[in-house]
Length: 591
Image 1 (tube, rainbow, N blue to C red):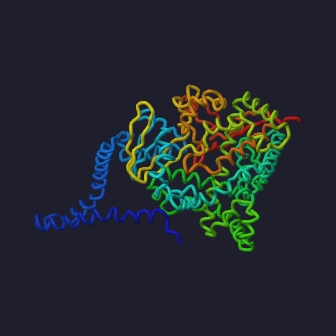
Image 2 (image 1 turned 90 degrees about the vertical axis):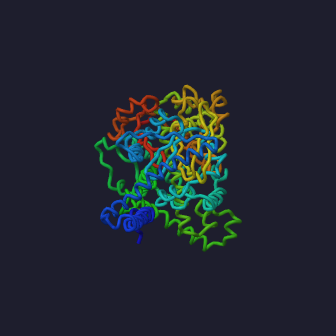
Image 3 (image 1 turned 135 degrees about the vertical axis):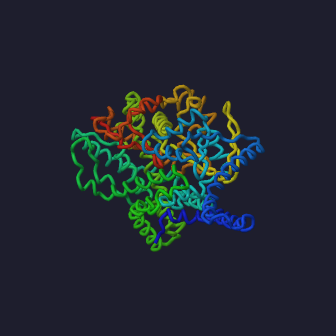
């Protein structure tokens, strides 16, 4: 029986609270007998002793700040400026509240942008139980991900928050375990593997047929739902050799259409899987904002565990089948013939640990489904917003692939404007808009940007970096940074901005932990978009179908910049997504 998170957390904190109070109690007892002849009432001694921990907490907080200033000076660095709270707020509780609200109500990272206006590109939040650094300085990201890679890791706090969902998988591990996952997975992402387009073609054809049928009814489609099903079925077949078959559920009707979704759709097993997958990720994101104190908000129940159990209900039978097949086959024959056609069959040649396998499959499923689904969702959004770009993409596809031919690896390599289009989607709408690491040891972050200072980062500090905001900085990308323009990846701006400073564009991470599936994601996105643009034109949003709570709030228009122009409501958990979907229409091409 698993103990709930809250009691476990408090049990770990007992020494933290009890030892100072116990020491104070015995010190006062002794002093009372020695100096005051036992005149102090016992209730007063107990009351004062109970204050020992809070007083020590305040003392340690200020002592740590003093020591941080001394250490920074000794290293020729500066203490990172911190966000000030306005009384009666104190100790960072209002900051935690703002971070959680940022997930549910605001455009992703709005709080970060507001603080940036006052404190610059790098600042820290002094929270109740930890200090957290926020940065959108690409030089700091370069240090964290590459040049000072050994000074940072995911860290025990991140591991504890994500463990209920991701376990010890590649995204939630460090050291030898991370190296094990990385080395075990890397050989599968070869050119031959990722350029086998049979899986993509089959599921893309199914998805687009569903789109045609729904549009023929005169009803719009939720493109996010469509491509999420395409990427889920493609990912599960590629990873497991077994697909969830979510496309067989069909497509949902808009809540505003007045047409109810069938019980077959609502109860389809893939929807149960997807709903659990989403719920787990949302709760993980909330934990990340709350920090180490998250168990107090899930005191009697791990809110992620039920979601993980549902997901495991799908992956476990597939994993057990793969292990049984490994036992029944000659291992040397498998290695010799290369019959490990799926990633799972490849993985079971390296480990038979069921927990390791389940964790790794779920980690890769997050990467294989959500990130590409996000890219295709916002690609459709941009096709709707920029019909001239859609026309140019279609013309390029017709010239290099043709109106009906299946694209090949060589075709996709020649589609330069399509690759630039995908990069521009990734720039403004990166699938992982925020990420972070924890300092393993005290270190100094340097930056070459004008007016910047070397900043001291104490050991144990979590450093969060905002990929989305780096991608949108006008001083890094030029005055048109907030405009959607794929040509920036083809013309002189590429060499002016990106070539000399590659860390201003990191949608797939960078350094030793760069995404292994980067080229797989490019190929899958490109393939689907080719098929889409071969068969459809005149892409447009359907605001009348957009659920009420997914329409951007009026106050977004007051924020200026790109946010003021948004027509879909972006949100984030582990990855970026459009709340309520992206509802739209498109016209079928007559070939």
